[in-house]
Amino acid sequence: MIDWSIITSIFAFGFSSASIFLSIRDYLFRKKVYLLRPHSDRLSEIYAKWILSNDFYGRILDTTFNDLDHKIEGLEKDLSDLKQEPKPIGLPIYAIKHLETGYLDLYERILKFRSDVNSHNKEVLKYILSLCKRLQSELKLPDWHGKNLAYYSRIIVFVSKKILFNEPGGDPYVAKKEDMYFVKWDGADLVRSDSEAVCEKGLELIRKLIENEQNKIKEIRNNAEKLRNEGQQLREEARMKLIEYIRLGALVKGECDVCQEM
Image 1 (tube, rainbow, N blue to C red):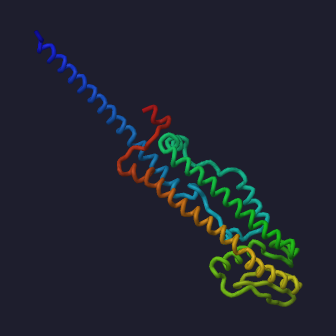
Image 2 (image 1 turned 180 degrees about the horizontal axis):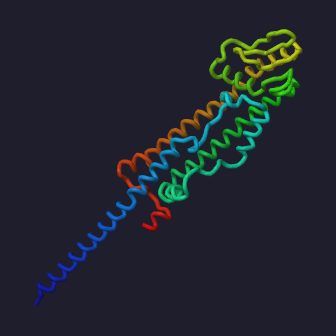
């Protein structure tokens, strides 16, 4: 004969144990949320500053940048600084650990994108330098100093803007002031020499650049725009996952040494 009292006791014990287990699990979860909430909020603030800063992936060059208008040796230093892989991400170790363990796909895409930007910028600088040195070998004028000189990188910037935006307005021309001749464009000096023939040669070289370098300059600009669009999309995805979701109440994914101690 079945002893229902025993069966009832067993079921009651089972339900009681399950209830205790669920209560403990709920307690541990609430404790984790309580402990991780300020940690998540702090990380979100750190990520926000990083994502909105230039350190997220840095600037993406093309041949129209005015700050490339400087000496050849300055361009060579810029290129030398880019020879290594992109500088490490400027985040605390524990913030990087959360990216590695909680957002690996996003983190790896950010690293790859930063490397792609670095490679693109190298190619831009190499191209500008090659044009500057080609011009210098033709004109045989010092770069940026001396009585007779040429602003080689400025020529590349102006030529690029003319090709891409039809700016500056008008065309370059040779002018004379006292005993010096100048190649001028939109009020800026590009070449200065006491020889009219040298300035005329400089003017002809500029015209050839406009004619012959259109495809390459447009290609560089298109590649830069593609990277900028990709970077903006990546920035927006990072902003949503690492800032907005956490501000709305989600806990940061992954873990770090700080989390393991909680």
